[in-house]
Length: 299
Image (tube, rainbow, N blue to C red; front, side, top):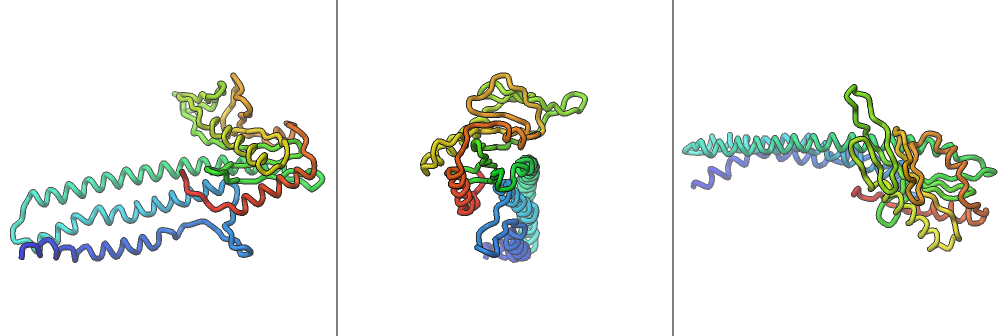
């Protein structure tokens, strides 16, 4: 029966299949999510959404690095099995096995390059958010000077990096990580110009970061209004760590800074005094929202 010549070589794929099953079983080995031993909820730290995305990126790299070679070798292993069971050998068939293996190897290389680049971007973003978070932690003081900082606050569709509650207003802080390009001498070009609703970096310009911060600020203001917490002043702040910010035309309702001295800047930017009762309810509402939040999938 001629069809057995094509079925029997599948036996040689069994070891590869078993190895693939082991890889799939171990794909969540590097999951960094931690659960509180007190209430069973997922512990959330500063930049938790980026931490979750970085964990998923490492899991994808693990799968591509482990499953990729297995899938790439499968046509060659099957072809060697065909050599044992085939009555006649066709050079065209062996060429197809070789071509398929080559194509799979190229796809694997592209996927690995993509995974590494994605991890680098996420690590840069995580480092920037942690640096800003550490700067904001300086606002936390005793009860006589009530400042509260909430990290990774979920909205209806995304997350806010940091929300700072002060006695004189609320600040919605979004962090944007961008890699500075190099000049001819190899020195980084770290000057960014703010021109209304556009950021002009060396070599490119964008609106997304400003728009995202404005949307987050508007959501926070509307969310507080829906909870009848009074007319609380909310200010959006876009932080570009490592950049020298030049303001040509300030964006409406936003502050754009590089993050150095951020705690002192927010402390010295009075918006509108908040009475103690409203301050207490705002802190309580934000605390409940953060605690109820479940980790969101990365967009």
